[in-house]
Length: 569
Image 1: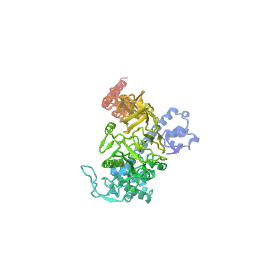
Image 2: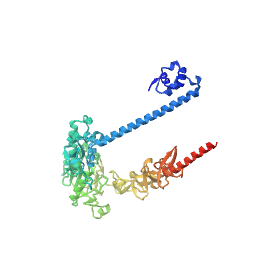
Image 3: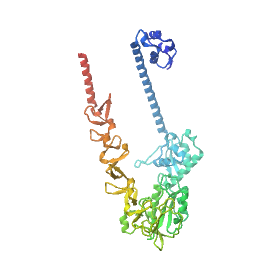
């Protein structure tokens, strides 16, 4: 509240009011201030009054403390009112929000980046359940429970029962579930797009019961293979973060690279997975090997699609790759079995060849597995193992190739397509910390010798005190606070923060566990360390909850002793 100084002073009790008004400076009478303490402080010079400075200073401090207490009370009341308001708003949103099944919510989350309607539905504050609730998917439609009907679940599985439920087209139901305030931000085109996206998604993933999938698998050959590589033909219904959308052969300029595939339809085909809009969900080259076996190369596509294609290869007698990567070159899976290199070598299946009808092409694709183009004098063939007949190595993303040197005995081809002396290369065969299969020759400069007597790529390792360790080595642990790997023996687990920390940043607690030193204190009673959550701070003194009663008794005894000494004095 703002008033003039003279108005504030008139509110003082006697004799302060008369004394202050008598000394009030004329030029201060109409000055506007917001508190009594300010009026007393600015009204006149205290030391010039007959009462003296201490007299007015005491009155000033009385009002200052009173005002601070009042302000704190008002602030506390304001904060409590805001908390009540926020909690009430939260409770209202929780009561009125639409509940979705986990599969429905997963679908909305995937579609939200390309659908405003899906994005709004994932925001609880934008939905309202006055029309219906407990929404899930059902064969291209959305299933919901009309408002007022009892929600029933299977007591054994927890699955929602269909009793009393209804089905509605996705776009129509979405209009009923989004709050009126947000509806004005959306257009008819937004809802039409949402409906199309839902139908396309369910056609790939299926509904709540896994039904309604209509992914189409087809084998293509010739010029159609080029279309399946082109990025513009890819489906985005499951996102664009997979190896399909990151393929090095997806661009328009790569379309001229595929002659070696398109002109050999008898031995090179492609398995393509398509969505309901005929867009490419996944693709994989199919090879007819010279020994009569068939092989499916790297699968490019989302996990759910890749597994469908791998299942197809198993059902149709194809050898496939146990790791779907351009860095893994062996067709080491067949049916439900997988094999290591020594087993494949024993049965003659490590080396794969495909004889092709060859002419000199202007451009070549980057080939994942059978990337050695060979000529034995009577025929050309592609293979995954370097031999003396190699003419070209097809591992260039720009349409070129690595020419073989006839006088390069003792040389090997590295994973990047370059040739180098065998003495300067390492052959690696292992799975790294991310599960990726590393299989092939790498230059010595790319490799390190680890403490477990293995050789690995430098990028899959870390150096600690000059020694190298694989990132999946049990002897090391990652410490978030230091953004670095440390020896496991130098780390401890902090339950308080639920993460691994360095031993130098930890303290040992009274029970033998460890805790971040910033989250623990020593107890004044027993001198042992406790987690902050197991302690109380009493007037700046840390006391464990177990010792709190003892501390309070000691504190009371000290107070009593002080009072007795004062009485005696």
